[in-house]
Image 1 (cartoon, rainbow, N blue to C red):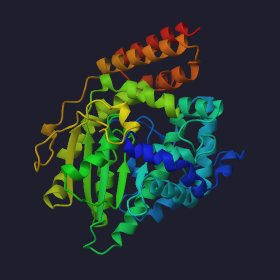
Image 2: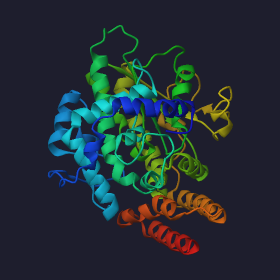
Image 3: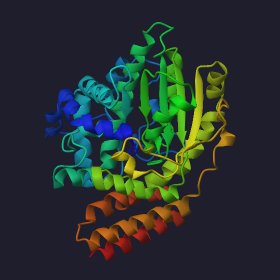
Image 4: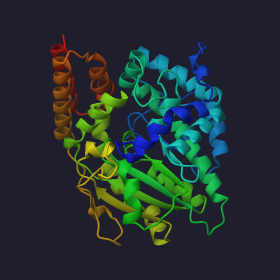
Length: 416
């Protein structure tokens, strides 16, 4: 989630609720061998992102209980290209989730309540990582081990976080389905946009853009790493249960956004690698455009059960974190006129990958240079922000591969 008021409130409550939600964190310490039967995540354009699950892994139209059974039976699909250290973490976390899927999903539900309220829980994929042993439950890492885990092992943690977040969300939709048809809480809000694009503030903007006083029975605050691929799955889940959905899109220029990822990493320790970051804009933008043009979305819009709005948040104002009277995104503007449905024509074209990567790498280099000048260690940040990208280069163009390999070699040498 971006550094917004929602994020600030979420983290202020996080430790208390994480302790209440405890789950079986100690089970993640088990040294038992990995449970068999987990499929591999195979990134495919328009199907899954680099590090998230395909939405087909859990049936959106089935009750959450069936998904929990699936999770216990087949577990969390594994990423194929992890380092030995990442694989060890993945096995510990994924096995703990598979051994107690119902407990993990209940813990995820409690964290969602902590982020919002019992009436309006906020389901955030990245927040689910606080449930996992070794990650810690405070906003900032409390020791070097937690900092290293957050900086270097986002890939190992992300699939398990996605799994428990999606199933906890489905469980909430099952609850909303049971409400009377006239209950105004039978509306779900869903965010989309690139990493650090300003998605967190879409929630605050939604009421003024869509309808004053609008209530949401649940909020799905998407991880940018998902490339907006979850929207059709969420729409199917909502329609099956007779619920309405509001989709919010945060449009931003990735050339200006990786500094926000790095600023967040300096506080929380979590970093998104440059390739996953850029894909969240290039592929995420294209995917959201396809979603708005899909027959399923158009039918839902025509039936009055789905609506979308888009916002260009502009630059984030860090002063808003300390002064709640200041808007987090003072330059925010709507992409469509008031009352006008958002369509693909309102969206900017997906950005070009190479220029976006070059801009992210320049910002990373500046951050590493400043850190080294102040005497701070940079190996973990370099690994998490750039080294982790190299595992995916077999699926990239030669130009992308050459750019990332050259940058990694140069920045590694500069730190010696």
